[in-house]
Image (cartoon, rainbow, N blue to C red; front, side, top):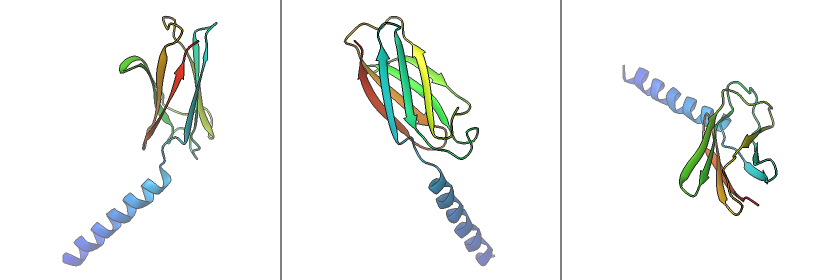
Amino acid sequence: MKKLFTAAAALSVLLILTCSAWAHPPKSVTASWNGAQHALTVTAEHSVNDVSKHYILSLTILDGNKQILMKQYSKQDSPEQFTDTVLLKDIKPGTKLRVQVTCNIMGSKETQVTTN
């Protein structure tokens, strides 16, 4: 019984380590503001093998600590990166936006952009 418990524990640890080796947060995030269209384009480097199993889960836009948009996804359009453009109509020039992307398996990344 003790050998069975030890083997199960060792297998569990090995499985956890293996899964976390495959999972990774987004590597980099860029955000660009188009003032004429009031559009924010966000791109995150996040290479995956299967876009429906490992993807960017959410995009969150904050003005300071106030959340102004949160968008969720069920897959990633490209195996190399995540990209989306969102319209933000009531943003004034000079606003510093925080942009966060979160992986559905592990981790997140953030950047900032100032509107013009």
